[in-house]
Length: 442
Image (tube, rainbow, N blue to C red; front, side, top):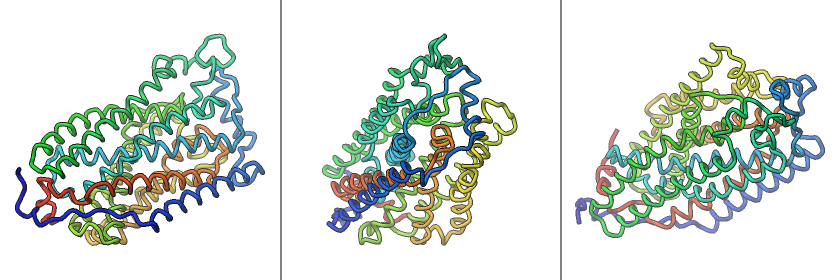
């Protein structure tokens, strides 16, 4: 049994999810349900959502008409928004959840020691993957009520001579067909769940038995997972997000979606670590660890911006109609409906974290890190909102229903995450690099 001398003095600590915390989570869910109901009522009354003008509607349906597709009206606006918001929130929360495993796997293959004190937070973050798979399948099934989310599922759209026929969509039938799509979705999430469970099991076994055997097995599992994730995360971005705008394509989109998930996941880990520290847990967590998490948030906010700009700049410069339509909708389309959010997205996801986190001291102060973490999570939720709404709701978007569903997801996510956090010691007492993490300095 190979453990370091210092570790013998480290005792296990367990999170106690208090009745007050459970009540808070339930209140978040109840508030979400109330906001959702309010949003549905207002939508039925024609209040709280935007409606496209005649010229905006003509522009929205022009592309479909040009390609021979029949105009498709879909569900009532409130139902359509619920279906799209279910998909939007689940894609966001599932992607962030997977980052817990990705972050942990990277630490393993890099032989990194500093992050051991937040390892259990990463394990807990991935608790949403199984519910995420279930909700993904349910939301995809709801799409078939009126094909509001994925236009390419419209009956006859790939059949020449049909009133709904679309030549561009038909050309993608080898990839965008329902059986293959479902197989891919189950495969992506099934693999993520498998590797997550494998790393979790090894981690818990290490807690009980010590030694370095489980550590080295975890490195091998992590290396395999990162190769799998590198492929499947990009393909998931094409399937879950890009196929909503079925005529549009971007070769950088997989990286763009990953960057949004990645920086959001780091922000979630940072926020959770700070909240646990303020609640009296994680005694080994020091400003040096927070500094490193802050550097990750700072650096990858810039990385997200780099990918965002690279995609935007290349499409703007080429000015090809089949590519430019994506940004035309978001910058000036639907009477400028999304223009303010387009620029607010840049401000909250790049300008704010860049300016606030620039100094060393800011990365070591819990209050600053909390503010930036929350801003990044809200900002990238809105980033995904901007990915989905123009291509689906066109000019009939809103926020009340969407915020209600987001609160429901948040409350459920927190219940599952804290439940997993409470199932094992917050400090992995037999991790071979625990001593290095305890003495980590920056």
